[in-house]
Amino acid sequence: ESGQDDLPNWDDAPFSQDTGTLIMNCIDLNSLFALDTWCLAEIANILNKRDDYNNYFSEYETIKELINKHLWDEREGFYFDRYWNGRFSTKKAASNFYPLLAGIPDKTRALRMIRHLLNPEEFWGEFVIPTISRDDPAYKDQQRWRGTIWPPTNYLIYQGLKAYHFDAIASELARKSADLFLRTWDNFQLCPEYFDSRTGEAGGQRYQSWGSLFALIALEEYLDFTPWEGFRFGMIDPDKKGKLSRIYIQDRHYDVEVSSSGVRLKEEDKEILRTGGSAVFRHFLYSENEISFEVMTLERRKIKVQFLIKGKYELLVDGETKKVFKGKSVKFKVPAGEHSVLILLLEKQD
Image 1 (cartoon, rainbow, N blue to C red):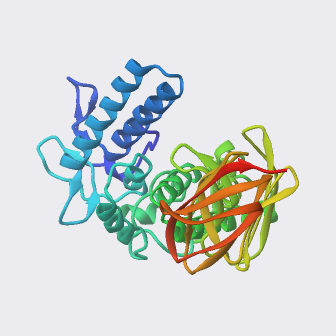
Image 2 (tube, rainbow, N blue to C red):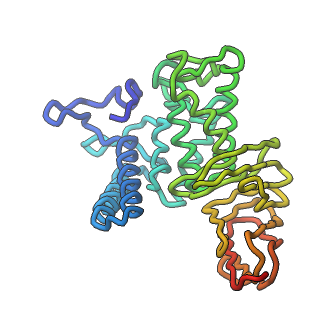
């Protein structure tokens, strides 16, 4: 049971006395289970527990294959719950996007899912994301899990969008979530359980711990560290200038400034990277001997990287050597799109 007590998906699902379950295979719970097995495999890998890693990753691959085989509706281009007699449920819930978080769909299927998310007749709008689609009869109920907006749901979908590099959509979701939270916090100092997806009004408990996830989403837009993106910072298309300071990651403090004119990253108050325009960086690694990252931009961008020591370096972009040079910094440009960058120290210099 995934915690969505009265979600309309369950309205027509019979209960089996023999198994103690609904007579339905649910996309939300199976996706969360898949995510759990993937995370446990990653933890086992870090701890060098090879048998545990193999067992957990094998379980992940199995459930991923089953979800793709049985819970994907090719005609609708969406994952659905499915009754044991083989019939798909017609209910489109926000949690039907959880497969993104668990890395279930390929890129083609993920893009088809996004069409549902951005459809204003289903999920998108001024206030997002409703727990059940706007075209569902239960949407008008606007109570509990019947059409309202819940911070945990938005947060998990936000992470799934980032995992698939849907950066512009993730940023828009982050902005809408933060705006929804702040209008209630600024006016009434409330941190509510959920929100009405038609009016944005607060509902449920006045002070709920997970309400602050909407604020956390806004912070993580600037800088974050996730299992699927590593050290990530920057925004693909920021609507205003912002700054996040003294964020502690891997025993170091970082500041990041983001605006339409560029991204600026500092480590322990020293600038180490700057761009001439907005961009998103992933898997950022910064050391004396090697600097590497993936970068996504909408346009050609200039990047400047400052090194820890003076030396002779090799710059590679997408695996191709661009130049070998000496010094303590480098400036270069990358075209629009996604690119991998690697800077290697070849020789130290005084």
